[in-house]
Structures are given as C-alpha cells and as structure tokens.
Length: 438
Image 1: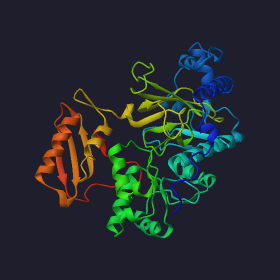
Image 2: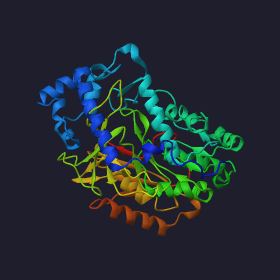
Image 3: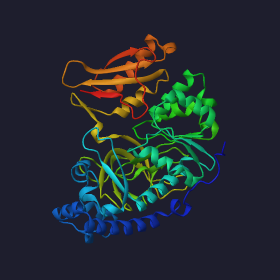
Image 4: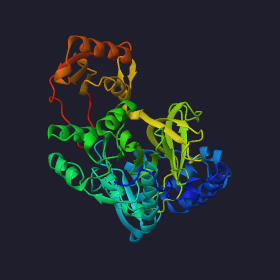
C-alpha cells in the first residue's frame, strides 16, 4: 500500500502562490476572458450590450460585478446541443461534449477543445494529489461513465499522478466485493450514498470494510454532511490508515469534477480560483457576503476556450473561509460544504426546510440506516419521514429521540415519523433521492 506521505502538491508553484500573485493572475485572466467572449460569443455580445457594459468597464476584480449573470435557463435556451450562441470556437475545433442528465429540462451541455481537456486533466491531477492520492495508488472509480463528467474526469487523470484506475462505474455492486478483495484499491470515488451502500454490501458478504485496503475516498456529486463523512470514515477505518473521506466539487458547466477539492485537513474544499473566479453572493440581494456568511456560489470560468461562462449562478449555497490552511494552499479559499441548493429548499406551510438539515439530524443517530422524506404540499398527507433503523437497535426510546430531534430541526412542523425494518428502503448507486415532494 502506498505511503500516505509523498508529494503534497501537483503544481507547487501554483498551489503555493501568494494571495497578491493570485489576484494579479485573476485580473489578467478576467480581462482577457471578457474581451474573448465579447468578440466570439453571440450571446455575451448581445447581453453585454443590453446591460450597457463592455470589456473596457473591467479594471479591477470588483468590476466583474458590473457584468450580468448567466443562468442555467440561459444555457438551456441558447447553448444546446453543441454550445449554440455561447460557443467561442469553430465546431471543427471541438473534441467532444459532456452534459447533464436533463432530468429537470433540456440538458446543460459542456463542449471541449483539446486545450479545455488538458486544462481539466491538470486541475483533476491537482485535485487527486490534494485529496491524498499518491503514486502507486489504485483508484476504484465508481462514478458513472458516459455523458456524466465524473467517471471520465477521474479515469483520464489518474496516470498524471502515478496512480492506476479500476473503471467500475456504477452498478454491479455485489461483484464489486470480489474486485475489492482481488484488486485491493486504496482510493475509492463515488457519491457518498453509494460509498455507504458499498460498505453495507461488503458487510452482507462477510467482509469487514475496515479490513479492506481502501484508505481515501473522494465523495461528491450530491449534498452531504459531516455526519455522513464520519460514517464513511469510521465504516472503512480510513483515519487509522492515514486517510479520510475528502469532498470534491465540480459541475459540467465548469469543466467537470475538480473545480474544488478538500485537502487532508478536511475543513472545506479549496476552490481553484486560478481557473474559476468565485463570488459568494446573497441569492436575494445579489450582494457579496462576508467570509463566514452563507451565500450562493457564482463562478466565472477564466481559462475555458470552447464555452466559457461569465458569472454563472451555480445555485449552490456555501460558507467561505479565506483563512490560511495548514496544507499551505493559502491563496485558495475553502468552501465549508455545499449546504444546499437554492432550488432545493422545501417550502412547506410558510417554512423553509433544507434537505441537508434533515440529513444532519438523521445521521447523528448511528442506529439509523437510511430515511425517506415525503412532502405533500397540496394534500392531506403532510410531512412524512420514514426511518429505517437497524433491527438490533430498534426501541421505543430511540424512536422518541428521533421524533424529538426532527421536530426541533424542522421548527413549527410536526412530522409524521414512521419506522420500517432493516433493508426496506432503497439504496443508491448514484445520487440519492431521499426527498420526494408532491
């Protein structure tokens, strides 16, 4: 098994850049970008003119706030299928596309030039090393392959850091048990929900996850919490092996996974602001919030070639910490979890409810295997939570504690809590679907 020591940086000169050096680089790249999209993107030329701005209005970093936002609806309307009015290069220069699933509408597309792909692989390699991947590691990649960026993003960058990859993708979880025994992977990707399902499947097949070779996991692609991290780290025994479960951030609109990565300190993911300029804004006033205050992530892709985006509203909520980090990547601010999505808030009887708050409460109880929330906003079924508890731990006292904590979390709402036997609720090989709203 590779030592958890080894090189701590993929690009030391970049990752240890000074704050002033980073600001100088950002000014240069933003100025170039605004001129680039104004001259090449029909969409940005039109919306810049409609908003009375042009690239000459940008002088320093705060001036970016003069420029209009880009939204997912803009992408759905004007970028599909090849890049549309956002495309800044001839079609012949594209090498391919990734895109979202389109479950809530037309898919969001991400075209790539060869330069874009190289940029992506570079930030992915930086991401892997930041997470603790070392030469000689074997990465079990259980993110999906195909149009989704996750699988191929990790797969195609592993060799750059001296690691090898088992391209498992999602599914075939029972046979994966034997693969873990035989290939002895030291790193595992995948959504946190899938990592928990793999853990459960190992145990059902007589394998103690703690005794496996897995040292580091890189969960992402869904909202998760510190309580979920503790389950993963304890379940696989990651800390005793010198590793941990380290949060990765990314999106198709940016490049894919690798826009941000948690280091070995596990205290928020460093956002790679040499490539992606980050603003954290109040989603209602659109004004910047201070570090330590929650706001919406708004990202400008400073180095993308095919389809760069200016002030793209991610709809993800986070709290920024710009204090120094013991890992030395002090110029790169840390996002203290994605606490939720602006679009995911549940409005119920005049109250806002965040799915992440429910997860935090549920996973504080080690006896809870999983849960399902069903919200009927227009009918008489109300707010229901189905809780699956480990059979050996079920008791009236536990049920009362869970009901009490959930009522305290939801405030002004008394949920109908029911309990089901172990193995009743579905398990997830991709993004979880623990919240159903009708």
